[in-house]
Length: 66
Image 1: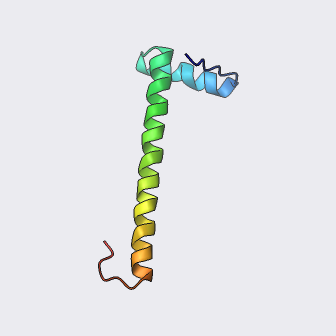
Image 2 (image 1 turned 90 degrees about the horizontal axis):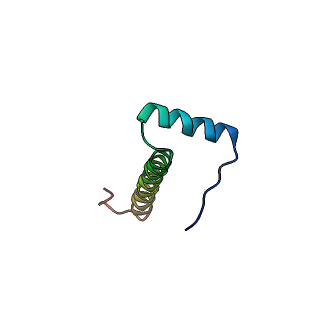
């Protein structure tokens, strides 16, 4: 099993605040926050890829861009 050590004061303070707000364990709070950020990053990537595909279609003169 891989261990995650966080030695950044701000990160530890934010994690402690999240634990206090949610009532979750530190592990659950961190995993949930990381999962949610990963999901947002994937959504941004998919949106970017779709925009680039539409842009390529427009550049090629395609009438079906959307």
